[in-house]
Image 1 (tube, rainbow, N blue to C red):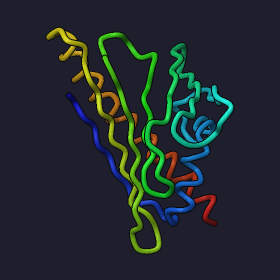
Image 2: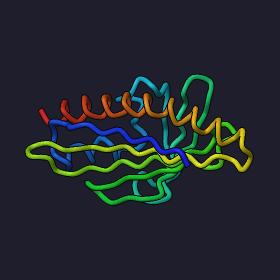
Image 3: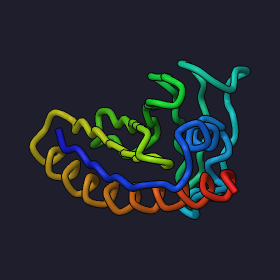
Image 4: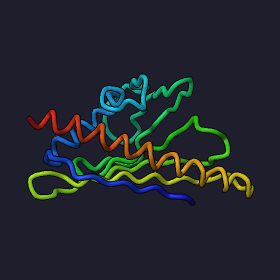
Length: 147
């Protein structure tokens, strides 16, 4: 399984980083990678919360699978190419002095055939650069909120 991992120090405490990250449907406000996002469930926090994310012409549904306030948020992505059996993003937040250390981990499970495994490796490379942009957007939003 290919995995991507990116991390960044954010000049905002974990509670502020969490507040931005956990406002799940507002991702389009802090990352240019997402054109539009909205809740798909009646709940707006916790395991089972889903959002619809539009990136260009692609629509992805992301459903929260782990919710540990101020520490960890993970969600599964549905709607990616079928060569990928499962994709999960996990965000981890820890205190780092007067700020936070934020890590995003992408776990990509390819389909069963060898060409699918090669495709998953290519997707992992692309996710790596996307994750850097997500971290930059989260950092900017959290640092603005902390001011």
